Amino acid sequence: MTTLTMEKVTKQFGRNVIAVKDFDLKVKDQEFLVLLGPSGCGKTTAMRMVAGLEEVTSGQIFLGDRNITDLPPRKRNVSMIFQNYAVWPHMTVYENIAYALKLKNMDKQSIDLVVQKTSGMAKIDNLLERYPSQLSGGQQQRVAVARAIAVNPDIFLMDEPLSNLDAKLRVSMRTELKTIHHKAGATTVFVTHDQSEAMSMADRIVIMKDGEVVQIGTPDDVYHRSNSLFVADFIGTPPTNFLKVVIKKDQEGTHLKNAHLNLLLEPGTAKTLDGYSKEKLILGIRPENIILVNEEDASLSTSCLVTEPQGSHQIIAIQLDDKIIKIVAAADLKIKTGEDLHLNFKQETLRFFDPETTLALSD
Image 1 (cartoon, rainbow, N blue to C red):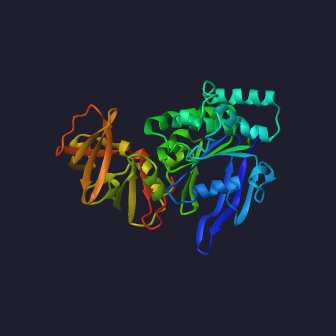
Image 2 (image 1 turned 180 degrees about the vertical axis):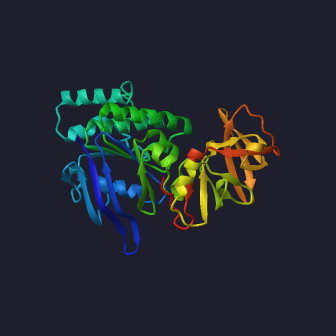
Image 3 (image 1 turned 60 degrees about the vertical axis):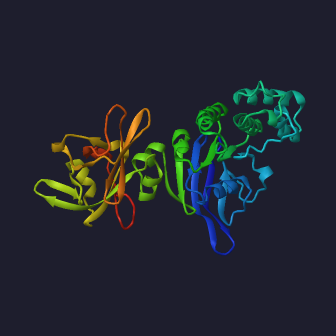
């Protein structure tokens, strides 16, 4: 059973640059955990500290019950896969996979069994006699994965391993990596800045910003229950739409209003605002949760700015003052530029954010 625990881990460069601050994390046995965030948020630095490629300024790192904080990389029993593959160009695929096993003084028969097993898992068992120059980018990445599996590490660390692949191959390799992860019974930490990659692969996602963790949760948690404006805006394509509104109460109930919107909240939705004493808030609504309705049922009416066909669906853009709002709608709806639109929201999906703290209000 392999778990990874990071306790108050901080990495500081020089006097003023704090790349990772008070990083707390517990990765479960056989979990596929993704570190996600924009460039420069500290996710790769956090992973490199686990691998031993960066020294820890303060805090502790444990693999299982072993404190590995100050151990050299070779004694940590971790495998790291980089975005540039890092396969040996002068060695065949077989030799690349077998190299680390030879360093462990394994006998030839044992090495052959491991190479055959891991290459089969990575679907490159028919390429063992080829050199990296004879392989595609996706095949080279599979070699790197097989080589990492072969040494039977306690944990796999993957630093944006798909970023050098073309878009179509990247999507198929997501499935391959997740399948290999399950077959190997591995514990995996995967770094990416691509939120669609994170959503499709992760058991849990750790979202980072400016060296700190801002939310940890399942893909469902971070998407549907984003805990801040940053997370709601970062996760999702197109991202969450945000509207500044004022809370008004009358005999009908609780309304959210601005120059374009008059939304009467359903009683269950309005309860989220109980205990919120401010007059203003920010309403967050995912593009797929804005619905086209008849004029009499609308909370907001406007005209279509443009449509963006996507094959399986279309994105409708509208403009409210200087803000573009995007709506995901069925592909067979024939909407023209300039056409009047009447809109309402799926209220159970609404998120409310405090404009001062930028944090979500509790459900």
